[in-house]
Each structure stands twice: as structure tokens, then as C-alpha cells.
Amino acid sequence: MGYTITEKGTVTIPAEIRKKYKLGKGSRIEFVETGEGVLIVPVIPLEDLFGADKAIKETVYQMIKELQEERRKEASDEE
Image (cartoon, rainbow, N blue to C red; front, side, top):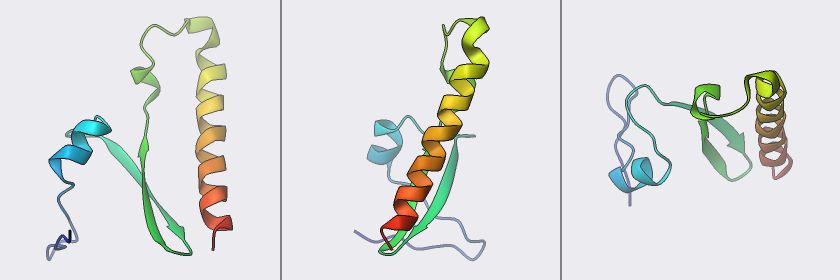
């Protein structure tokens, strides 16, 4: 299945993908280059961790950043 990039550089993410990964207006994603192409990775805002203890919020945020960095590294290692 292929999609067309508009003149302004935008492309529509299919509805089934948006639903599966809970992407909506204002959602953030990252583009990670790999040896096989470009990987689109949803960025999970800290606010989505509703219910997390405020005392550990910074620890959770750091863990998320580390996981995202590991994903980027793994993707670049595949090249």
C-alpha cells in the first residue's frame, strides 16, 4: 500500500495505524533512519502515564528517554 506526500511534505497516516498506536491530532512521532528505510516511532508524552506517582515522575521520564535512545541506536545498528 502506498501513500503520496503532498507539496508541503505531509502524508496521511492510515486510520488503522493511528488507532492501533493511539495517534491523534497533536501526537508526536520521530523519524529514525535505518539501513532499510525510515522508521516512524510514536513519542509517548509523560502526561500519558496518568496515575504515575509524582515522586517517581522524573525517574519514569528518564526511563522513557533511555528507551527511546535504545530504539534509535538499535535502528541505526541495523544499517
